Length: 297
Image 1: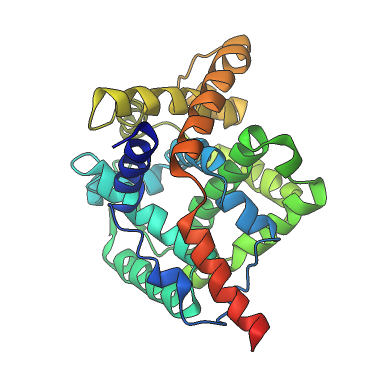
Image 2: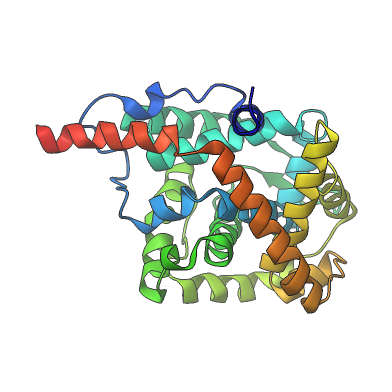
């Protein structure tokens, strides 16, 4: 097996559990997908760019951890420490299916996540009750996620593929219905609304011991030395996508020159290598084939 094949196999195992499940994206022919996303849309372009999604995904986990109730739910109910790859597979499957998948496949994964959320409830260390299907908590998790994905795209996509200001707003508008299907409410729909929302949320955010522990775990996990190295390089870069106040709260001390002159070039090189190894996305190709059926009907 050559280098490119090894990279593809390892990434497919890490991100998709070894099975792309292409039937989720290829059929039924002509189906427009639950949210009608096409290859020209900002949502497709952001979620289809591997380096931006990897760095943005790590940044999203760090930012989300600053909500004490969201972090309590993860800490008390998730098996991310015992099975981080399994947790990653589930998250990747949800994002790829709701973005590129057919309407039935998207409804299936949304229904699955909604059912899981009904079972995730408890009491945070500060005594407050929480539940994963709380609409306000869902809005936080979604907003932290899409803000990070977009930041990753704008930092690591080739310059011609980056979004204009108007396209950034379109990205947020196109992402919002997924959160609303899960039960979120008052979801920000423009870049300015996202930043205003984060400003309003800041008094409620802090790094709990569980949050700091999860970030430490995130930055060192991996099944092999090579995987741990790649994760460390990408998570180092992902800290540069966080707002300054979030880095401070998480006690991440990476000066701006290090983030710009060291972390970003290394992550760009790693990301381009991974993208080369993956080759053209089979998932996106399957989705394009399904959408092409709509034009033939």
